Image (cartoon, rainbow, N blue to C red):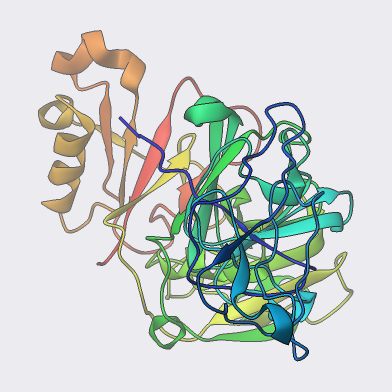
Length: 381
């Protein structure tokens, strides 16, 4: 069970910086959340203000700065009364390098707060406030989980960096807490594949269009789309549509590294704002099987032959193990609803067509899902 440890965000656009905090002074009012900074004889605080003056903004959701009030009052220092280290940044350019950032106004406007790793419950969202979050930016090293209610209650959704959206879908004015953590999917730049950009959609060596797989998971940014391609051995490139096409900005070219590999952009009339990025080498490929919704198709989006496999119908893991044992098996089709038919082999179907033009390249994206079909394409990890 997740037990949140409350932390306080670092607020932007306010002066001063301090250390050596202590818990003294007046606590916030339960109604307004405001308080007055308290003074204590505890030695001079550490200030960035060149004139050693203090700054105090009582409307800053319960924060005050803690620099001394001047040479005459060098023995006094103002402290944060919430028992957290006070760290208020002077200007927007003092942003934390590795922190998520949120806004409470449309189009990255209004108040802005940066959140380093930690849990930020209702009352600790700084200037963003409860049920006011609109825009969100998450650097690629982090992930952010948004919560509908306090104490991690209600619905929740995790956004992996790199993520950027001026108005987070389904979360407008509905966030009462958030958690910032390291992104376990983050890969150092030196371990990533390199990509070469071409205008227009991706084609093979004969300038023919090849099958692309709509990849909503990578639509947050171009870098995220490329990162997701990197995790799949059969991904030879991506198509990126900044204005969006067919339900996503990101489309993966999961056609392998053979005759159907994407090699360049289409020579001819431009299709919308398509940009093709060709993957230059295999790096960071780690998934044994990549999951796709619907039945398996080849690189042209065509249905391909499959064979019922009784020995693999016990569970998905067994089905995939059976596929791995056969060198000509490129994928499995799995039907969870056929649980009662495990003995007949109707749950597990192997794609035993080798690794040529009829190898599985993904799931069918045209039309509705067939029953509860799921396609798992085997990678060379």
